[in-house]
Image (tube, rainbow, N blue to C red):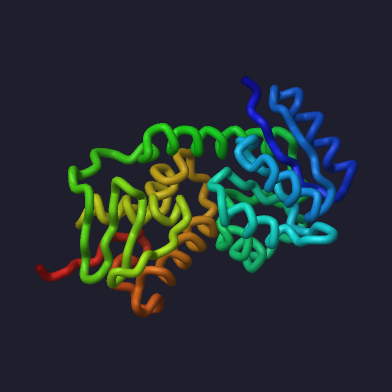
Length: 241
């Protein structure tokens, strides 16, 4: 069965170039040229797509608006395409729940590789529930000073109140609470959570870590749950019994 992609791009020439290449790569591609059309397609057939390619600059509704609509009901992989190449734009897109970001102009070979990697990661995570995490400890629920992580139900609570985490944020948190005392480099985190080779793009890790800390830490500027070891990586905070 062909994997299906929703391509949301207002430049028809770029859209056709991307669509044609991905069709040759054996994908089925549906296109939308503005935010309103994209939202109508997604709302009517949200489960029909294996990945969404999303331009940020769209008429009628912005790409970030569409991304928030998608993330309100779906964990389908979203790959942002944009001519904007600033850290602010990357942080904005990834902070709203995008899985990856590619800057225009890009090569079709790179785009296809990222598309396949995103779909592969999503499929592996959904089938295993774990990504390729090594030797998880047997606990089903971990509690650390008011933060409770339910590993079976993929949920977290802080002082009894649900913490709304994206799939990637939960996987990062799960990695640390199931490996107390272990230090993880950014490359190791990327390899486990994204199930792909790390090419040194620290922005993806930094954005997800910042968003996670904003949700679980009392003071994100002085984190207690996930500590930074400068020049090395991150580890779970040390809590007294």
